[in-house]
Image: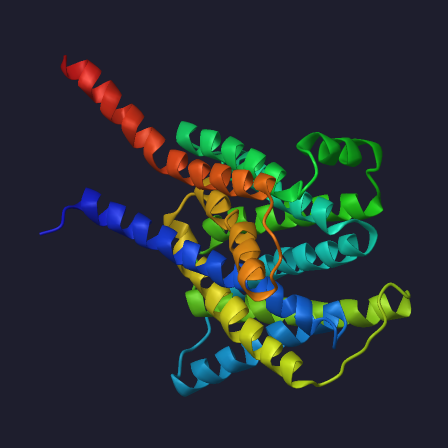
Length: 318
């Protein structure tokens, strides 16, 4: 019979594997979204992407006769607002900053998560998680520097910090808050209700934002129903939204928010690999170094604490 300790370990590792799969799917969407946005405005794409996912999930729940839990509706909307704000500020930020700075600033959520975890949950991350977070942060720094030096990226951030950079930093904060609040809310509420209301909220708010952005001349509305756009909408709505948000809502509760943030940092690695194989985009030496540091950060966060505990226990025995 499996004891409680081994059962918890299995649950944790299974949850981490689910989040890593989710990150792999997200990394693969970069190429698809990039090509799809040639045929549709950004906020409209997000609105349809989440709207299709909500409609498919609603139909599944109706067929399976799964009832919603009314007590979980407001928490689902709460999560949806943070998720929407992350997408919205990221979209606005990209209009005013470079893709390199956007990638780095969005990746800074890995540092924000443990801070928010302490503030919101009053729970300190483990030493291994903190050390892993630091390695991942420097990995993202290397990965974001492209072919230039890390110093030039930091210099550009310091001297040319603009409105777009500020919005992208807010985007990282909103995504980090979403990661932490998923940990708080998902254990106490009905899974299917949280999932449906969360993605429905993002869709509704994105439609509103699309028309407001058009009215303010931030982004004009346009859509051309090409075959690639239809493929992009179907793939991102079913895989990157319905499956991924479902995996996050279901399994992140067995993983600490800080560890989840580290796992999510693999997204730019997977994105770079997909871009390399599908778009023939080159990965620089700095990019390889960044990938190695991110991978090392995950390994350190996984084994450091158990190694430290084992060392302490051996010291006590001797």
